Structure formats: C-alpha cells, structure tokens
Length: 486
Image 1 (spheres, rainbow, N blue to C red):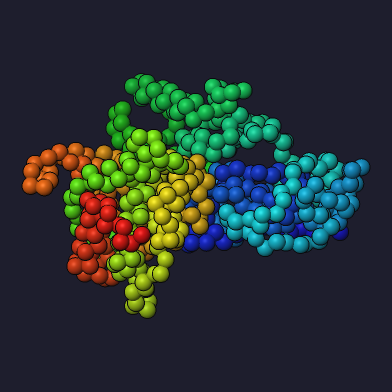
Image 2: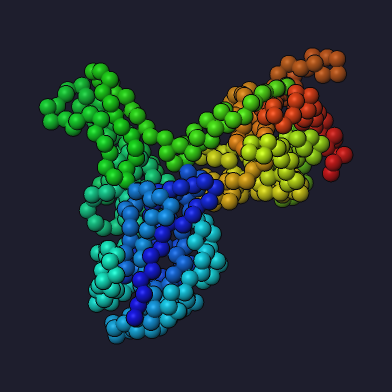
C-alpha cells in the first residue's frame, strides 16, 4: 500500500524562521522524484527553491502563493510506495517515475537533503500528470490517514505560472519573472487583468508599473470627488498581498503604513541590533586616487592590449582590504558576548553591499584573502548578477567577516556606515571625483576619494583603526605599496 509522507518547511538556517511561498512548482497529482524542487520560497535573505526529500505522487499542497509559513509547517504530502504511482493503464502499480528519476517502489525512502537552496545534484524527473482515477485513490488514502486533501489544480502552459493574487479566477498567466509577480502582489494587482507587451503577451515589469501608475491616477481623481460607496479606510489587505495599509490623514491626503518584513525587515532587525550591541566609532580620510585609477586603466589595457574581463575599482579596493586585514587582523574578528572573548578569524570572507530591486543585500566573497584581483572581480560580478536576479542562496549572503560598502555609486562623498553585525568593521568608499589637491608641492586637479572606517571599539582602539585606514589610503595613493604583499 502507498504510504503518505508529510514534507514540512525545513530549517532554513542562519536564524530564519519563516518563508513566503512565491510559486508552486508542482501540482496535486504530479509525480515527483527525490530531491526535485517543489516550491519557490522567498526568505529575508534570498529567493530559493525547496527540494522534496520524497519521491511519489503529490496528494496535497498547503499554503497559497503569497502566504507566509513558519519553519516546521506542512508544505505538501506525497504518497510513496509501490501503489502510489499509476501504471500506464491508469491503475496503481510500481514503475519508474521518469527517465533518470528515482523509482517509485522505494517505499518511504528519503534523501534527507531538505535545506533551502541545497540539493543533491541528482537528476530531476520531468513532471507528468496522473489520471483522475489515480488522483482519487491517492487523495482517498490521504483522507483516510487524517490529513487534508487538496483538489487537483489545472496544469499551466510551459513557462507560464499562475497569478499569485488570491481570489482571482483560475487559469494561467503569461508571466515568468518572480520580481514581476512580487511587484504585483505588493500593489494588490490581479495579473489576469493586465495585457502583456512582451513576446506572446508576456507580462513585463513595465506593464505592472504602468498599471500601478494608472490606478494611482484614478485614485487621485476619485479623491477629489469623495464617493459614498468608498471602501473603509485602513482595511486589512487580502491574504498573501503586500502589507501596505492606507490611513486617512485629511482631505486629498493619505498615510501609508508598510510592514517591516522580508528583506526590509531583516535589514532593520540587523541594523538595530548592531546599534544596540556594538559600541562603534568612525574615522575617515581623503585620499588621492589618481594613481589607482591609472593603474586600473593599465590593467584594463588603455591601448587595447589587455585580455580578459575588466578590473573594477571595487575589485581593487577589495584586494587592498584583504592586504590591510592581514596587517591588522583585529578588524577581521567578532565578539563572543557569552564567553567575553574577541574571536579573531583566520579567513577573510568579504561582504560587499549591493542595491537590488529587493532592497539592500550583502553577498559574500568566500576566502577573499586567497584570491587575486581578477578572481575577486569575477566573483563580485557573479554575485552581483545573482543578487539582481534574486538567485542568491542563504550561503552566499551569510558568513561575512568584513564588509566593503561603495556608497559612491549613489553620488555621495561620505558616510558613517553601520557595522554588519556580528562583524567588527566596515570600510565605506565615496565617489571618486576631480578636486583641487596639493600634489608634489603644487596645486593640481586630482581624483580624490573619501574613505571611512566604522569599527567596533571593543576589538581595538583608535590607533589600530587609524593604522588600518591609513594603510588603505596609502595603497590607494600608491598602488605599488601592494606589491609587498603579492
């Protein structure tokens, strides 16, 4: 007989306790293989796919797209065993799930690899639908075990997913981008009401933004002429929609209350904790970056002679940071409050701040101390692309030991950055701009940058922090200083 196994939302690690269901990748009645991704979830750190440790027939799904589930809550149930998968004639019987997939006659066999963002690398079986009679049998076995059974869901066309807006009519929607779906949920838009401007009617981000603007214009026009049938102000949004609440503030005005959750909520919690626990201090210095920019131009072959990817300023600064941390290891550490110990870390896992559509994230370059400029630059480029696409895993967003923050991209010169808890320091870099500068005893126009270091005063004093920052500035002004550590 088939055995019904319940798969719960696994431990996401790094203190994550809940996740939002973005998109179901399987439907009730689908045959799944061991370690096949079954649902796409978004945590406070990344958007990832969850692999199911069981192989068999999906008999129930729990949670609508757009809803949040805590760790340990049921995700779905799978009927496993020889009777779970139907034969070609429509009856239950043993047989392979698909070519390259796991067999169905494995009982309650499970891989155990259920961490978000981590699979086993095993071949993933292609989905196939189960005949209605088989679904009825599987669902009946679930009801007999006391677990709720979900109704079969119609299959969507390839590359097209269902709209995540609750209460809408069934049917596929031509949208494939998770960011587009998230934007629609945040503004409570029904994607089925939009006409896509992309190929084959694909709904693009521009289509959603245009609909948001149009709705805002209609709302402004209606606000000028109040309607007796207006909806109550401050009403709670529908389940699974963005937590935005509108509160009346006067004629023609309104106040928005936006819940702190997801990435924004995680950032808020971490920054608040940093301010509460870390006695930070900041020092800064202006540096002449003219020689650094010249060295970068030479590396990139100003005359077209250099081969390979271009070296970025961020990659050069990251390499300078690893050299400085080798000389001042106090700043590559953390504080163990319970043991009242400063823990100096042997490896440098360098985080860098990246602004994305999902908000500010800090991807981590692993073992940056063992990489050269080219390797660091390639990894920064890879992580940045993944961050913008929302593909970063929790492992790529955690474990940093020092952070580099290039706020110069926003056109500002200086800042006092907040330390990325539980690290001990962060280097901030402003924009590099032409300024008057005394060079070799004469006034000249040079490329000047402001560098700021925020550090945990528990791990070192101002002398160590000043020495670290001065070494960074020396390397920026005279890149040849780095040759001693290469």
